[in-house]
Image (tube, rainbow over all chains, first blue to last red; front, side):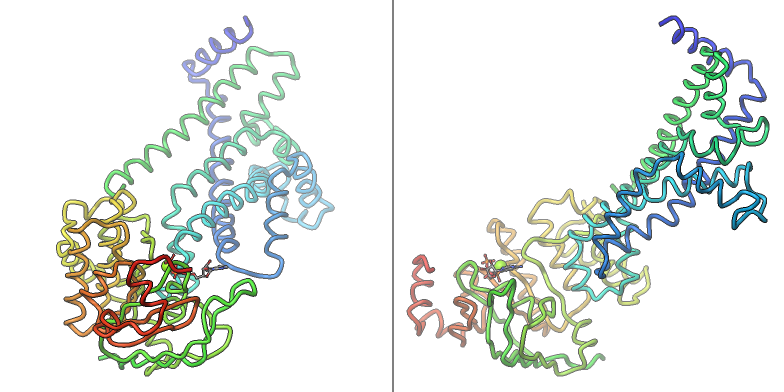
Length: 234
Length: 238
Ligand SMILES: Nc1ncnc2c1ncn2[C@@H]1O[C@H](COP(=O)(O)OP(=O)(O)OP(=O)(O)O)[C@@H](O)[C@H]1O
Ligand SMILES: [Mg+2]
């Protein structure tokens, strides 16, 4: 119990000390995760919409694979990305290993299936609702997807937030491909792992509380943005 | 002026679902003017026949031939569904949506939509999300959405089911206005009184087949078949 109280207190102390290193870590966490969420959304949402609207041969199989990929173990993703990016790997020449870009790549791979799958469900439900009307109005496939994505935007936001939640707390993959290098690839989760390993529990816990607070703040911020947008229409 | 899509000639068409024949084989001509009401017991195939006419149902066999090319025909007809399908948008945007699809610019579409919103007395709710509208308001809104594109053919599937007298009256007025303006109307109803008030022609469906077809007056006064007689008496038909 004492550890937890001590952790909270030092979390506050850390924040109010305006520690430059800490802010660097927080900023990198946000930068990596938000970039990954945006890229994964741009890939995953149309993919989910496309899967919802189209009938094709291996549709069920594709959806099953997608759902299975949601449970992809981050460590395995990290390992594969590591091998791909390492000097002897196919993308070795790009020199991306142990950079924030490598971390973004790993996170995109981890959360794209999640975002695509949640988007697919949301759009499939809306499509079931809209189907006859949109067919009756002679919409083209493009118009259908555009309408569905637009009208399901709040569920899609939830999909993005789920992706954000998974990515911001992820440690296994980014530890492997980022290397937890101070001032370069150290983010909150990898810092927590490091401090825990060193036995600095209070400090690790402080970072943990900051991580949780960050996740809550981002969720609230996005929620309030969508609410102001809604006020006029909903 | 777009070319005329009617008359429509349906020949030897039937619809099957899961191996079961739902309607047909049916031969039916739809002339370019008039107000036809399709009647028949639950499950007799009224909705399916309307969907077949509209092209939402692919016939297992048979043909539909429009006076115009298919594309024009598809663009010049509107369907009002038995349960209103509302876009999760404002009432106003529900009306502008098909207009914008047809390439009408946003301002013109908004003007048209405002006109229709006031025709159906929904001004106060024009910026409300359509899912918050009452059942009757939704039905009026989907009728307005269907009429706003100025269709040559309007198909309505029980547009006044579950509505009270005054809401029914409002909708019937809109339908009569559209009819007078030259819109070809085909609708289904369970309300015999409504059939008498609105119909010029009646199609009586029974077990997926056109059992009786003709002028409304003679159908209501001297129905020919036993099933139609029983239906009009209010007997329960299987
Ligand atoms: N997708 C489907 N699969 C199997 N049977 C179907 C399907 N759709 C409709 N049917 C059947 O076709 C028959 C006709 O249905 P339809 O909806 O056209 O009847 P209806 O005359 O409109 O009835 P109601 O007055 O209840 O609206 C019904 O027996 C129904 O169960
Ligand atoms: Mg029906």
